[in-house]
Image (cartoon, rainbow over all chains, first blue to last red; front, top):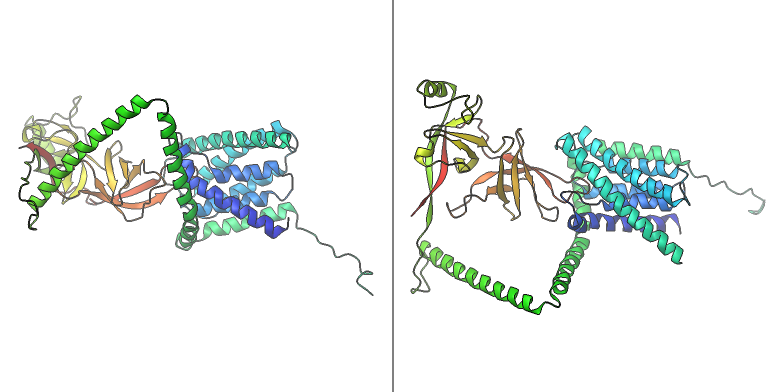
Length: 160
Length: 298
């Protein structure tokens, strides 16, 4: 697949993730917390793909999350790319338990960093305790969904 | 020298850490962009999501319908009973709507089409009690006269907003306090002659409200200049500057009582509800005269 085709595929996935976040994720909410599809897709992209440049794909999901939101552009792009880069440097490929652990750690870290950035730069006017509670909830909920999808992908690969 | 004799051209990709640095630099630059430049980009991106959202809404409705049908399978008697109940409710609603139409026709100046319909009599009517907000000096006078018991268990504390009308005039806990057609707050506690007001911006204040475009939510005081509007789903369209009306006055007064205007809308990643900040319509710190909305049975 050429770079252009790969970029188009990533953009299409990012669009779908943004649609899921706005239209379907609220239906899956528990309390005020819903899974974040852009975050989930970005993490799966780096965990399932062993290429050293796969973090750039997670950056595309970050841009989608920024554009679908209402606060400033940039925080999601920075966080998604940075966490994606961190995961690509870890020796996790071919080791499912480590990959699952990376998904949990990555989603929690992403949710917290984004919450922290929103709070620190006054993108959100909510109280710090609310931001922290909400970020933790989003992180764990997204991690649970990511692990379920990861397990399904593994099972499908084993079936082939 | 032919092209076969030339050494192969080196096609080097930048190292991943350089790519990371470029992306981080780009994101920092994006963060510095003023919001007025970023907003059109975000609006365009959100408009591009619209076809997907329409499909998602259709899928959601279809799934809910299928789940409803699946839930009713094998329970024919229950289904029939629920349908009968629905028919009964719809008939009741129909009767109420007919009565409402009749009353509206009686109120309007247009010629009546149906002369047989008699307007219904109002059961409850809104009544306004004019009140003044007592300052410190007035409170001190009342305290000396024994009309205010500052410091007792359910009495007035320093900093409370005290009105000069109380339970004797019909004020009761939860009634709206209005200032020029706009809601200032609610009655928190009442004494015989006085009552204490909780402003919409005070921490602990909660009321059911409706946005002008239709969605309902819960307005909460934050203890700061703005109120927070909760429980409005992110699937609902909300615009900055949209008025927020009270739901409490329905059936008491005609028209709508304004709480304030939407000042800022936020959506945290993964949130199911908007974070809406409302600018109160009553901007005066202490309005000299207010009115307490009560009702009287006719």
